[in-house]
Length: 307
Image 1 (cartoon, rainbow, N blue to C red):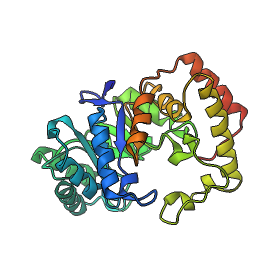
Image 2: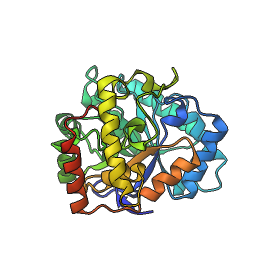
Image 3: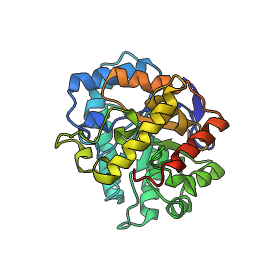
Image 4: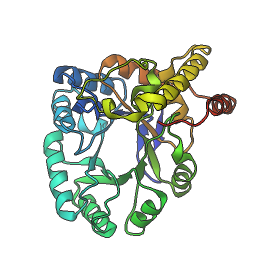
């Protein structure tokens, strides 16, 4: 597994990270035993960066069980979690990290992130609280998630920001204009989440797909109506392009994200060992500049997207 440096002066991390939102049940119920088996499979295949969050339902608790029964050691892992963006007060941050450490079964996390901007509390309070946790040894690095450039600037005016976690995929390219160039220029690592656009870029779904009520996608406009049809048509064209080159749509989606030089890690959610294998295979495909240009043309020909 290729490794890249996470931010200026940061640690080496694998380019494929395990996104732990799905095993928390946010995209439909996942049997705990299956989730644990999937985590073990990822770790055994060098996907040793795991990203979870306070808001990811049962994710941290399930991960804790998986890590306690894994045969590896803590220093082989890079554990990242996030504090809810709706309350980044010092008091809540301290409670949240305490709960995360207990559930994960560890005495520190490698990366603690603000899940989103909190307009209700000063960023100075948030960053100072994070800073105190790094001094205490409970946190190694501090990052942010879903922040704009001005929000990152405000955070960095107080303390260091090692990484940003934005949504980025073939169907969601808004961060290319300002956010990714800013991160690259400032030495901020990028952990790209939702590279498969919540499954739109897997080739598994059709306009007739009905998601269960406990799956967040049942309520997402990107999967229904005209927007859903457009996104699935775009995915179909991309799937054909990948197949002509001996690859799957999943492999293309992940390889394309990793081909952006600003990206450090592609966070891929998985519910099964087979999905982990798909993600690991994708890391071996290095797209050329000419191939990226072909994909740009293919996307432009389809008109604006909505994912």
